[in-house]
Length: 243
Image (cartoon, rainbow, N blue to C red; front, side, top):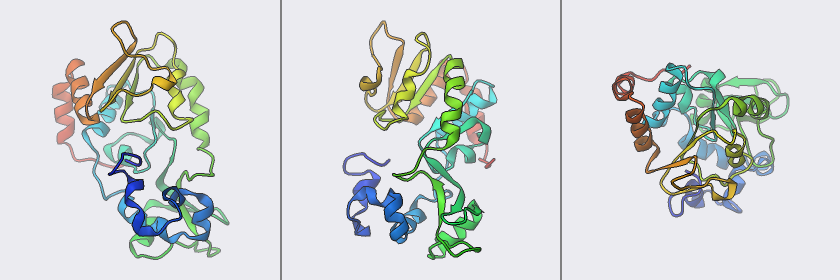
């Protein structure tokens, strides 16, 4: 939750003495001052949180061979932890799962980065000594190639688009809702109606369906509607395992 007034991540960054909140995710600032980001990374790092009901619902879609692809703006790896395979994921804003040296581009694992972050050291490359950055997308960086590579085929094949927990204000992610065919239904799960600026239209005769509430509650409702309540309950009892 980055932008929610009074409680989002940007609201809680005052302690880092940043020139402005977004600086902590700007590549130029990170290169000059990596310490604030790595302080914050201890709070954001995968393993600090557990997959939610919504993450497990995505896994249920995969188990039923109905998940074409899951596009996410999240960087926390929780979809992987819930058991969603990597080839089903498009992590548009990157991931902590791998990291790379900013100079020589040597790749490092999640476990390596975790040890460095929780040792309070700025992670430095073992080959050249430069800063190692998690593969999350900072302001000033391009989105992953996989994001653009999969869009044409995925959205042409899509026969139901489920949109959960997004404000649909951050581009180019927000405009993805326009890329499905005109007859493709779209289900929006959110605490308020969103997407008017990108063509979402709510009404009795619309293909767009709004489920008001949290992502978890919305996913429970969908599982009930689809007749999967028992299967979903069984899945939620299983311990998550990263893929």
